[in-house]
Length: 428
Image 1: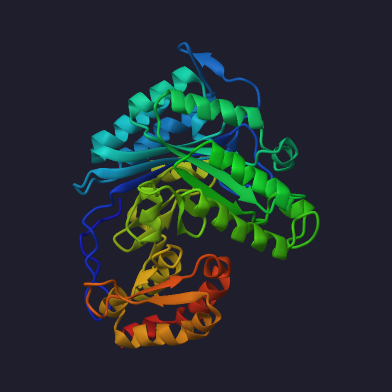
Image 2: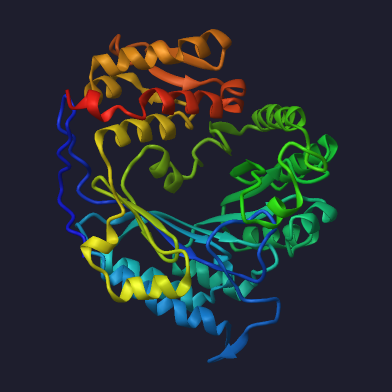
């Protein structure tokens, strides 16, 4: 198994000491009844037929086979002594798990790493997969945040992207979640779907707002290779909305959600005050995290590694864990600089320039400011003055909302090109 030391020695002006242990864990539950037409995630399709009754509970045999392997991987990962503050069950469709199956996974995590009493524990749920007794069991197991995969409120759009639920299912699921006392509720929406109009998009936003979630994630459709959409559509061409229309959808989203009291805290995420997703902030702040399950990624003390995406290969990988097979990439100082820029600029507050100077040196800081200067003139990038009472050098570099966020790919690709070969400079 990988050796996890507490310090990563880098070739930076100051040696970087990483936190002694990740405090976040992601578990990939790869099972879906069918594959959505836009999805390129590592999943296993179980079909639309009802699951078999096993010991009085509905369960899919393939899930029964997967979970012991997932638990084996968790138990084989050494604890570094810091309890988990966030847990996220993603997929796939994690809500295909029975309450007993989810509790077994939570118990395994708690036994191996420990869980903070107030840990944020999230699960992704499809609106037509959740029942009262099942949800009650999830909550008893420790789930306190739900991400509901809404995507759209129009039946034709839901069918067009391969979703199995209806708008009525959304209302029923939200009602059930409220009835069970869960207040931390996130809704997922997708803009830029085939034949989607601005009126439909505004309707989806308004109906989402009316359900009073504490968080809304809005993703612009990306036509990924090897998906059904990639076979059917050409990006930027009809029946997909034009780039101009999707840009206007983004601006409209930012405006409507701001009026409804949501803070645009990350490129694709909006939250009521006090309700940003703490787990996802771990990724954007480039902090370490555990990942478990098919295709899941981890970042531990400068090591990034990803599990196999195929079920048999993943099971064989878990059975024969060795250091040489686990480590896929050791993060260099150049990697860390790029990760800090690419991830940090997704957040509304951007990146702390004093941290850039301390970790990578004044030469890198000055070059960074030079590279983004043209975008600052365009109004896509801002360098905020320090807040009152702060030291003069405590400045933040951020993308503006909405235009900087809207054109983030242009800014980030320019930064990537400017700093992709930075290891030689940082070693100097």
